[in-house]
Length: 212
Image (spheres, one colour):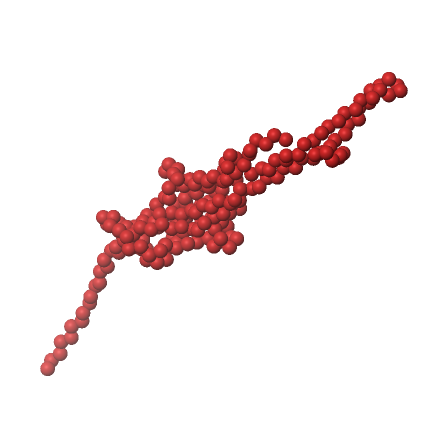
């Protein structure tokens, strides 16, 4: 067998000897008898075994960038711990982070960030097979009427390839959102805070006048 050095494969170094004996039968027909030996040992079924070792798993981590600003002028607003929530959903049984505990959806919340900007990450995902894996990331709409929430879904596509020269997995992550060009960078989800409109109070007073 020719060893072409392909990564992940083992090649057999055994030698198969084939002997063909041709004799003429009484009916004047030729008869061929074939025998085999592997490394000198006779066998009726010569077999050369190869093995293939799968690549080690590769990992990817999905997420978004969160920005929180004042709607009046765009100044940064401090983000409180757990103030905003995001949901990761796997499509077609795509692998999920360990924290999902086997579910195809999981929710994470923001860390505190005085700067008004933070990365929201879902945790490492392990991939053991080449293929294309698709996810959606969406912000959950909160209950604060002073904040505008952006629930536009983001599609995250993870492409796992196989480099046959090294027998290792390759990965490419692409994020896309309606109306935007796909990118390999985390997309930003921006929330805006609008100060409530001042209310008005109507005060009524009653005057009592008595004769002393």
